[in-house]
Amino acid sequence: MPRPMTKDDLISAASENYKKLNLLISNLTDEELNAPFDFTKDEKKKEAHWKRDKNLRDILIHLYEWHQLILNWVNSNQNGKAKPFLPKPYNWKSYGDMNVEFWKKHQDTSLKDAKDMLNKSHNEVLELAKKFTNEELFSKGVYKWTGGTTLGSYFVSTTSSHYDWAIKKLKAHQKNCKNK
Image (tube, rainbow, N blue to C red; front, side):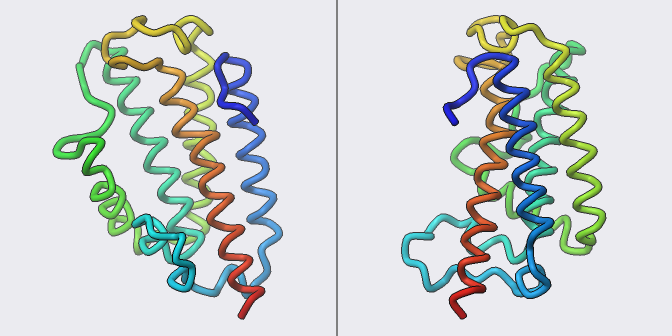
């Protein structure tokens, strides 16, 4: 599916990919749910997240925390409080460290709570996106706080694109479980 460039495409892609993610999760076997993630044998999986996330909860919490980023960022800026997307001290070169902090923060969060938190935040993000017009979401320069990109691209990144990432990771885990 191409990257959404309209409000309707954004809502549709986010909803469809979220359904795909939940269908994949519902079809995980007990072994797949309980086996810790281990991608060390795959030399292509060098990015830090392949080592960071150890289970389904970690993935769901990662998605939840990125939902919180966009919700807090949009709401703050809409209410006149200028705020960057990434909280200080993080930037686009150091956001991996932020992701590790998210991971650490939720090591005592249960899988059930992670599922509930993600479901609630997914709905909140979609409801927030629906409040904007197509032009507000996908025209550059509408909001100076979005920098050189569009507000919609942030919504895409924190929903459908991130759900794709989670699906790929879970499928890689499933493959690993089958190859043991």
